[in-house]
Image (cartoon, rainbow, N blue to C red; front, top):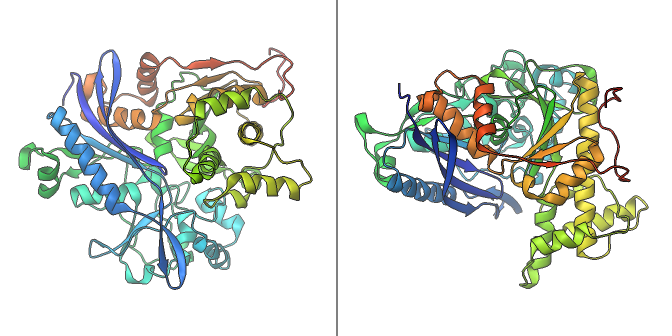
Length: 497
């Protein structure tokens, strides 16, 4: 077991971009070195007379291998590779071969799967078994609606699919498996009743494995492609919290228990960490989810729409070939002095790609509100609406769990959005600590470092890993502005406040 400092590679695949990062871990903390970054997004294919959104996994694999080649070229002694990705989407395989590119969760094909599943198992029993927030693109519903599943003998979630392509080993990492709707919330095993609800045979899903497990060495062809050794000297893949939010939560630099987190990116995942799932009717009615975390923790949270709304708006404005200065736009949004509408970012109309400013205007018209006028007002409306959704979600989670939240940690790309962080503090009435930005890659690196024993982390607790983050990163603090009109306390009133 290695006990000195060393380096590992994190492959972090997000819904809008991917990256390969080398993490250098020693007694002083973690230093991150990005060696590759590449775009990711839906591609459209016409199938059966309809356009379907897919992921281009072949291009992603090319980019990942290029990134790993750069990582090994600069750091030949990398101790491990870890892979994380977004949740719910999967590839269908037969005899180890991918049948086609995975369908994107924003494609509306999945919606008919809800009716198929609910005809076989009621919503209350479904929640009692899997503990998941109802989202029409949960893997359970996707598979129930997938016409190609009958030709497949295996489904692998995206991170597991890439792990298989690198090592030849098919496995289902448990944190990502917990997002599928097919894992029992209490036993944390595949649930035969849920498999039957989607008409899936036994063995269709890969054997479950945990973060920290060694998946396997790189295939000789992969090792040659990335420029590293084979046989006894082959690099290997270590399973991490392969749901990107599971890795991000590892990197929340909190040493106290009275905190909530917002993993802010394309989506915003707003929640708290618990030791056991909450499967009450109140939790189901609030549409909260129980997802698996590293070391058997439970990420009790809600998925709230995120900066997807802003990025899609920018894409709409740039379709004429112009460019947008996002920093200037955010500064203009911060300077907006008039009231802007607060809309529901979870409305289904905002899920598909498209013209978000027009959809926001349509939502406002439907609900009797004046639409925002001008780009700065649209941006301010988006950020106010997200902050309001965060505050409402934290109030709900506090009520359902009884957890008294006194501080909010924002990690991920959204932690760089100063206006969003300040509005979140204002609307929750709680201090917001923003950072680290690359929380997912950092959590990925730390779970690997513990697994291979770098810097004395072998066997370290989750709290000890977070202490490393706290030594490495100094979050930016945002305090609620006194008397701010948006301020509404999030948790129950306290006489000590």
